[in-house]
Amino acid sequence: MSESKGLLKSHIVKKYWMAFTGLFLMLFLTGHLAGNLQLFLTGYEGQLQFNEYAVFMTTNPAVKLLSYVTYISILFHAIDGIVISMANRKARPDGYAYSKPGKNSPWSSRNMGILGTIILVYIVVHMQNFWYEYKFGKTEFMMSEDGLSPLLQDGTIAEGATVTSTGNVMLAGENIGVAMKDLYTIVMEGFANPILVVFYVLAMIAMGFHLIHGFQSAFQSIGLRNKKYSPAIIKIGYAFAVIVPLLFAIIPVYLFIMAA
Amino acid sequence: MSAAKKLNLTLKVWRQKNGNAKGSLETYPLKDISPDSSFLEMLDILNSELINKGDSPVSFDHDCREGICGSCSLYINGEPHGPSRLVTTCQLHMRSFEDGETIYIEPFRAKAFPVIKDLMVDRSAFDRIQHAGGYISVNTSGNTQDANAIPIEKEDADEAFYSAACIGCGACVAACKNASASLFVAAKVSQYALLPQGKIEAKDRVLNMVKQAEKEGFGPCSNTGACEVECPKGISIENIARMNREFLSASISK
Image (cartoon, rainbow over all chains, first blue to last red; front, side, top):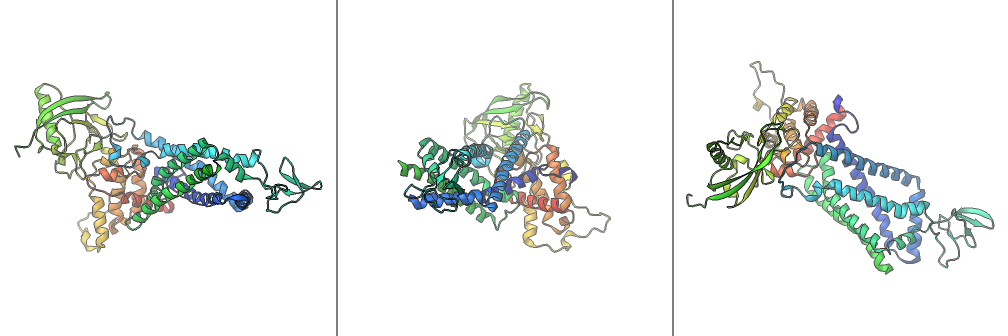
């Protein structure tokens, strides 16, 4: 196969990459969702747990490695998707005057590019909302329950200490560690905004439709579908495509209602 | 049967002088069509009228008219081979249409299926894909072994037969939003891959046939499943999964 060698040469190889990155991103979604569900915990305990979780997610080396794989997967999935979409169009330069694609295929399967674009725009906004704010924004710092002392990244209360603008905890003029940032409050404040909540819910609807086709399509592309597995793959795919985006979407709605 | 109400139709037919000419949809009213006539007979009637008027008849492919040769095509009312399932255009009857209906008739559209004239397209790309690997190398010296001498599991033999039912009409390409030939190639790969005689050249076969399909300009597969729904022979997209599997393992080892 000298001519079709290379990462992106053959259509089928492009589809393998689409499937493998897609399946990995589904695993990522599951992990991300598990983390998000902690936002249902209320009060100081909930705030502390979520902020400790945020520290873990930003400092653990294994998580860091996984996050790079995730970024690369998203980028590759998007670029590969664009390359495939261009090949799709090229294969039929003259279209039909009258066509009824709805008679033979589901809408989502024919609009993965549009759905993917919506999701990509959402990811950029979402990263700006929380990732960028947490890393580079003017994030407040997590304080003890009485509101007097800052917390270190490991969760210990630094009594009588102050936090510098760069996030260092100072006690008696000495730097005793890095302060825990308060991502929880950024999230709470973010989802008090109804426009953002609506945007997130719409993005999750797009995600659901993307997954309805994407899940089973990934298994088809890598050749794992047959009479034995297909029924299970289709059922699990539908369940995943409904449950995961639904749980993701419920969180901002719930937080908005709680804030109101 | 003669009591059946005759149909008055409006046909919107793609007319194009040749591959280089610009085509357009032309409107033809057609009266008193029997619901028992086949779709191609209806076109024959239209052509008789056109010839009688001194116009050029509509070109369309057809041969056996019994659903086995794969010659007929046509994209009828937005679907290849029309609205009925598991039939070719020649098996489609006018009783599938309503009196007063407007019927759109277009050629199969794909970069790899260039229009020759009107509704006739060049599907020789399928032949070239077949030539790239859709065969087994057997020495026909006169001592050829009887194929039935090799025991084959019934299930595999049946599966191979279902795949071999593909008549190469191109409806899968016409239906696919990407004009992908995946179902055709997959059926041809599968019909051999499942049998012991075909296994020997399986790797080269899948690599070469897939390569040829891409060279012809057929698009990638989006797994929409449209091809399976529109295929007059009911070829399953499980064949595509098998082809992808075969291609993956062949790409790694060859």
